[in-house]
Length: 347
Image (tube, rainbow, N blue to C red):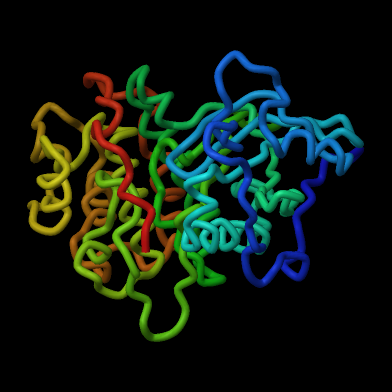
């Protein structure tokens, strides 16, 4: 703790399969990840269990989704704050979700990149609720930043270069994130860098090894899903590059490269929409040719037309950094992404 070095979990400590899950509570009693508002802090059955194990005390909910929630918690022995991710009743009842929850732990445990959220622990409560313990991030996700307006090209590229660093390490061990989007990129202050990046939420990530790397299902968020995922073509790290490319458009230009009025149009646009430079969509936009070319290449329909790897894209970004402005474009704030939820996490 004195040196501040992040501690990860060795892969050998993680189980090979999800633990057998017993019912958490009969109908009418609190759901582990969905407590009743206004009730006592120990309303979660696993809260008492975690304390009895002498480890963690849940403090407040930070966010929730269809299959679980993330809480701020206190490590009782060390007195430090951490983030605890728990499944709710719906997640516990779905074997595929349980398997994906374990996969998330195993994937994050393999990564030592400082731009990836650190996994501290993985365990199962006495009543069978699996949970992940990760570093607690005191920052803002890029999605919330974009609600206030676009970023300067220099700042956006600085953030994207760090995302590339995280993705490069993940792709090197066969992990494709599959849900890169502004809400999964957290920016915080570290040392002299006010925009230090942490990539989070590997909940729908996939190990892609061997000759058949097709996605078993369409997972992710519609605005950022790569075309090859939609038509069951082979999947690799360039799918994450595509999603990061969409993010770059939002951060710099303030718009999606091909927005849609509904989810069906959005998904179709990934496959069939014309790829353009920003100035072709709005003649008032003035960006260096190298940056415009990059913004077009990262959203190419054919993965082979995108940068070869996250590390190659990072190199291209770093070359552009001295050439771009540190002032945002004079464009309206982004709309905050499409008004629909991520694709169902099934399959």
